[in-house]
Image (cartoon, rainbow, N blue to C red; front, top):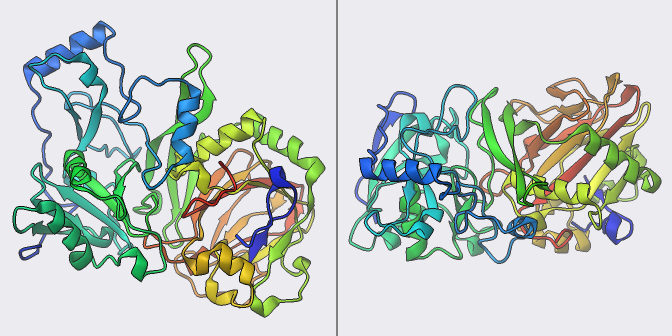
Length: 500
């Protein structure tokens, strides 16, 4: 079952929520590394002098490196139409490599492709830069998995867009593909359909596919893919296609870590530009995909959420599956909860922006923040957060909300707001693809995440192909000593209108 929302607007709404032959090449782990492209001496000299003179500002946004205040940042994550998110880019040269993903001594090797004519000296063109990621074994190792990940494909393009190297389903063995004819754009689209077997969105019950940079920036997708967009992909070098249309951080392997850029949601005191931070993501589980996030929420923010939610707390309700119709919510869930909006609340608004920055999914895909309080012995039995339309056939409101499954909860960003002396763990009983448990009230088997103040986890309800992940079954174990405070953001695979 999924939880049911109730209350006033600011506390949440009720939830009804062409190609020549392919050949196998070396594994990502054993392939010879490709070196970075040489940078011209004149280019390097000019860049150093310009930096010393204070001319060049490292670009934070693709189209504009000089941020124009906090309002601009907020608009990034609201999301309009299809291309609704832009995320930071950093200029990287051969001499100045930047770790885009790993704290495990594996850095993405990247060259900065600067869109300017070296002969023209046009300073304004220095403000636009695209991160070109080399197609090397080191870079591929940041995304490939030992086992197939349905719906996630790593793609490398040469500078002409005529030759591809593809890690289908993120497997470590790549295929090489030479596109036929002179219309490489059309041939690439055909390869997506015939080579990767990606179904068009009107033939499936998922969102349209989309292509992302290695940092999670949405570049283009099924509904807005053009010749110009294909040119953009060529300049990025390595990109990732998600069949479900939304970014999902690749887990790679248990214990894998990557550092990511994060907008905090606040503006700097000195000049009012958006404040940035670095968060570390670590993979706790691949099946289901569960990530821990360090350096996301502060102790002050944890206390603030508790303070504003306390007067609104009510015993939680649930949206019942057909088979459970008529049963009281307390059979499944005994916690108290409240839904909190961000109107006139700087901290809650900052956390919404930060959640969008963390997930690389626009802010208008979020629900209001759900705040939870578990007292002694209170718990939430095993459940999933997404809605399987087959289990709600008698619930017209839920089916309408999810458009019979095309819209659904993509991920849950879960914040632990207090320490708990004993109990209160978040349990994932199907960790490692374990079978469905008979007793959904039982806690202790599988992955257990201990509640600690300031800890954050992200777990995904949908796979990269857009299908629901039954392995995401989870439970809140009974609190044995103390009080457990927590909060979460549900992020959908489509704009929902709860948060603007």
